[in-house]
Every structure is written in structure tokens, then in C-alpha cells.
Length: 136
Image 1: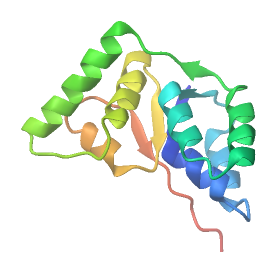
Image 2: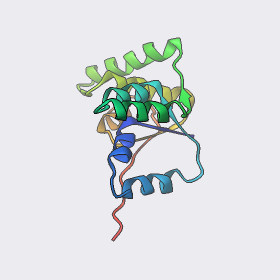
Image 3: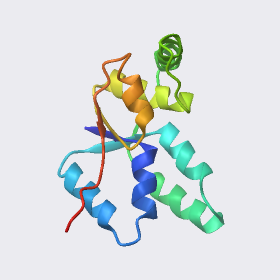
């Protein structure tokens, strides 16, 4: 199972010639993928207008989600704390929550966000930076 980060979804939704979306489908293959409620939050808050909000909300309502537990929040805060004490800064504490969900559930985190590479320096985070290969 693969947890797909918002950074990948944004690239898919913005992809007009479908090259990135096709590369994503190739990468996923037959593996199941899931989202987190954090992805839902980030995607919906970025909607450009009411029509985009409705389309995104409709799509996201059909997806599978990993849900947090009481420990998720504490452990995500600890990731942020450990990074800070190591002298590493990340853009969003939400990334710590997403990373913690991947760790708790033992799933690969597919992303396009360098914050997850930083997080992997303080946690055993199964992560993969997804980069579309150019097709010449």
C-alpha cells in the first residue's frame, strides 16, 4: 500500500498533457493507494473556485484514507521536535503528521516534498521522492 502525498496529487491535477498522471499510474501499477485527511485538507484549501472545490470534494469523497490515532499527534510533534533539535527546519508540521501516518501503518510514502527526506533523517520513514521520468 502507498500513501500518496499532496505534493504528488497537485502535480497530477495540474498536469495538462497527462504525462505526469500517466507516470503516476505506471508507478502505482496494481498497488493500492490511500490518502490522509491532511491531504484532503491541503487539496481542498487550495481550490481556486467553487467549481474546483466541488469537483475535488467529490473525487476525494471516493478515496480511501488512513486515519489518525491519539498517538499520531504526539508522535508527529516528536518528529518536529527532533528535527528542530537536529537543526533541521521543515515547512509544515502537517508533513510530520503525514509521515507519522506512513510509519504507523507501515506504508510507503510517495511524495515530491523534500521535507520528507529531512524527516527520514530522524525516523525510519519508508519514503520515495516521485519524479516523472522524461519520455523522449
